[in-house]
Amino acid sequence: MPATEKLWSANYFKVMFANFTMSFAFYLLAPLLPLYLSERFGAGKDLIGLVLSGYAVTALLVRPFSGYLADSFPRKKVLLISFFFYAIFFGGYLMAGSILAFAIIRTLHGGPFGAASVANSTMTIDVLPSSRRTEGIGFYGISNNIATALAPSVGLGIYQWTGNFDILFWIAIIISVLGLWADATIEVRERQLIQDKKVLSLDRFFLTKGWAIFVNASIFGLCYGVITNYLAIYSKEEMGVTGGTGIFFILFALGLIAARLSGVRSLRKGKLISNAAHGVIFASLGYLLFVACPNAVGYYGAPLLIGWGNGHFWPSFQNMMINIANKNERGTANSTLLTAWDLGLGIGILMGGLLTEHISYRFAFWCVAAIHIAGALFFLVTRRDYQNRMRSRID
Image (tube, rainbow, N blue to C red; front, side, top):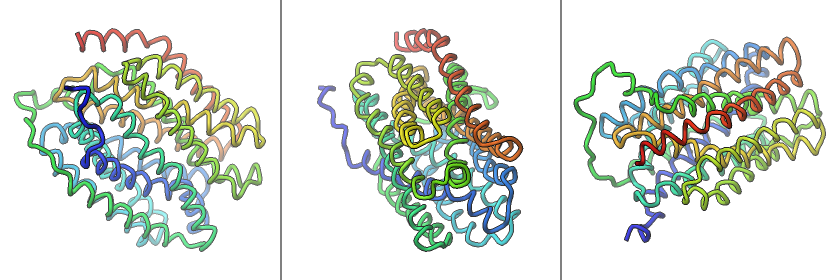
């Protein structure tokens, strides 16, 4: 019977592990790259924002085509090729001898990341039984959440212990190769590929039915991009916190994991909209607490609320996208959602650099809180559109 279909298969573990390694390698470096660019090349805050935003911009440009490739060609081959290039690009950071070289490598690196993350998340849908797909997608994100918790702390700890960024780049390479190996051992059946669709059809690259979810994910990605990329410098320069940044990310991930686990039941029952509404409200409260209380309460309480909120709304958004998409548009649905996140992330990194350079960190974080609250209100206003589209797709 469908209710007894197995969720925790070997293939499912492998895609989760691959997702973990991809995220771990990224977040190992993310909070430290602003420091690296500042110390190694003497880059200012606005230049740091410009250099780091290139990664997200390239991922943004590649995402729509990644969904098309994942739907139109053998998914495993697309995944392995993109994951291979994602791994080797970390070696480019070791060879970058100037800020220009680093910027070029960092920008190009976003391409294989965008393609690999789309292909891997879509592969997850392929290996999940249909009756367990909703909760399986919810659990899948925990692999990313654990990486989010561990990687920044590990990266900051290694840097404080060694003062050597090259070690971190080598660790990122090794971790990525392990993920590539895991995906290479996945056993999947051949599936029917997209046929008879117009070459220039927009829905091959962007799920237009999910426009409202796209807008929301972009807004929340912007807020996340500011706080994660400028937290380390803000903590050091404005609050005098040098050892607590890792704890911030751990608390953030604990909130994410707790939300994922607590939200599985509501996801299984199909309560996607209420789950997402719960998340966007709590995340907004977290951003507001962070900037309104520049003390230990705000610094360590905010990540729990933000993580709890993100852990509720993100799997709901992903399931909404998949539910309103046709069966042969799953890659497109995933790429549309991830494109939205990358768009927001890139804008957030760039905006954060400009605001912190020319005004202040606190002003930047106040803007983030206001933008997130606006995004929450937008979701509450447009949630009926999600509900109508999901009902029409299911019925």
